[in-house]
Length: 604
Image (cartoon, helix red, strand yellow):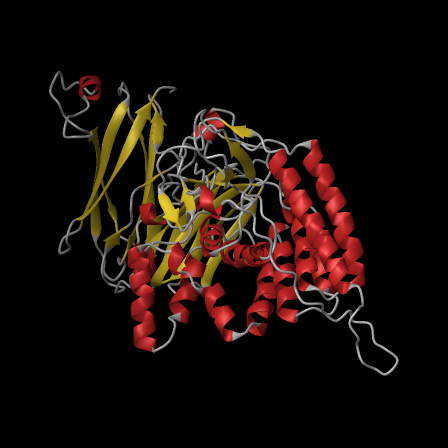
């Protein structure tokens, strides 16, 4: 959990500086001679709207709850005038807005609507109307308003539409709207909005800098790849981390010429913090200690308390196909950026393991998924605020999926399922370099699980014998093939004491000649000790021997994958961690060896 608190470093900058009014703009009403004359009272109307907006922010500040101890302490990051604090484990949780603030916002929206109906093309009024509709949780109205535009600048109307669609959870549509906005901007503004350097770690900035140097440009392709790698969940249509970035720039422009909750003039410091950490989800006023010379009213703005870093690190950006799962995990530690997706503010690591059965120039991939138990600090302390489900997901059930994009971010294979909190998804994939994302989402709880890691599938010559990873399977009849076996993977790697151990595997590269295969499967205590009680059961006295099975069988009659499984009883085995080892011997071939751990637990 991350809490960002912002307060003023010096009372010298606490004065609320009013922005000069925008120049009067065309009303859009044509005159008798075909021209579009200025509305005579447009300046007065705009002053009226600005006064109403200031009154609302004054009312917001006056009704903020008081912070107890949150306004002091060292800063984790200082940006211009602002102090940012990273607070994992914070007890802060958003409080419902005061009734006076709700009433003041309703009055403001009425005032802005009346002014906006008379100077329809004014960009400032349009931006304020959209923003305060979004604060009132009316994103559909905001999107409709931005779409009608009223004769304003086309790119700005598209940006406001993108912001509204993003807040409403319609991310694919938001992508389209923001695409139009970027296309219509002047080049300097577009470069500013597409700049990602403040969101990246040092290694990632170096990757983009090197790419820009090689291409004699801005490193555009590597930035686009960075955004594709940073998409929180592929289960959700559209890349909401990218639309969030552009939405934050849109909000910064809305606020730049307006009264803000901090009561100070807008500056680059507030823009940078907003783009890095998002707009605030709650406010407090810091209590001042008796006797202090600082008589100013300090305001603390809190970002989403469940925000995590989804923008990928340089380790992932350099080579996503080899990046381990820990490099992809959303972090709530102090990082350059943070985000909490509306559909799942909490996305946790799943702790499952992807299984790859390589078959020459292809592979069968088994992707287990389990919706994690939410054991985060905020959940344990019952501090998580009520989850507001984005409109497109209001009636959605639990959903899961596995996605395999190539290193450029293009999804090559995917499989989805609904209504199941756990299971296994199986996909067939050609050899190549990928990264895999296994995902499960419960929209009603705002909770998701994700396993993301690099995946490189090498081509194996058809005559080279290889042994797959050993598969621990759920109890039941022995599966007939590898695809069925993958669908029955044991998700937690545990076997109840006294139950049978069902293990499967696949061998590739046989069938080119007649041969007899000798198998030996052993189970022994992890770390080198043997199953003493199992040895006693087998009549071996107190000697420490592994439990083992050995058998011979002919190899396959023709080339292709060969699947085998065996059910093995483990009588009188104590709970603990054990090693399973399989050896496959054939004359003239290197011995094939496979290993895996299994936990024996109570309950058999």
